[in-house]
Image (tube, rainbow, N blue to C red):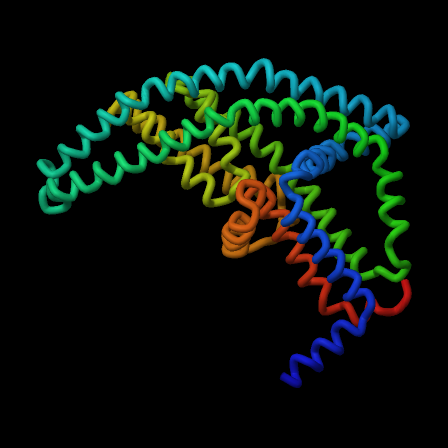
Length: 354
């Protein structure tokens, strides 16, 4: 007990460590208690962070900040319009077609499962096959109830989307245009001696900036490569599956594993154990291999320097705390924790006035 007391007194006698602890605790408390309400603000901050690199490039070419931010914002609105009016309708049609095909897919899956005891009696018995089918039926029934409840609350969802479509672009524009004003305003509430917090911020800004921009291009490249491969083999729901594969890279390791199942299942329901099924599966595995071994090192280098175990733990922990957004921001949050741990031992040396 005395060791803990001595460590506490020795550590928190440094005002910079106390300040950094308060900032981190306050930030996590705000996200935990008001994360849903502030979701448009958090999303707009991420988008502004993504676009900041383009604004800086234009500023370096001699354009004023307001003009650079305006040009980048117009490009962002154009991109958003293409997604809303070009991509989403096509995705909606494919989702509708997939839902209509689900009963026949489920029937084909049941027939294939019931044939397994005949082909592999030493592996699975008829009773086990029936138990698996009963479990699948129960899961499908629960999913049907979830879909029904989702459709009942669809009006609220549409209103939320409309609010996002109005607020998000507005917030992104002001975050881009008035970045320096906002940072000066936030800095006015900070103490003068904050060397430890500055060190953590520089590390997080460097790594998270690289991560957000690199992850955006990784999503686009993996989506485009998957769409080309699926369209070449005429795979059903090519656009929908390509979008899912593209966004799966947001969750390293886990995302690629989970998305493999719908890609393989759709290919199997379309062709069975045929040559086309094998080629599509091989093409998908090649895309995943190139993403992990070529694209990720090229886009990220060694900036996001986290061990795979740390990434998986971060996904589990932050996903359990904040659901989808926790999974989405797991890597930046893990980067923040890593930066704090790396800066913490140097806190005593940073206690001197900067």
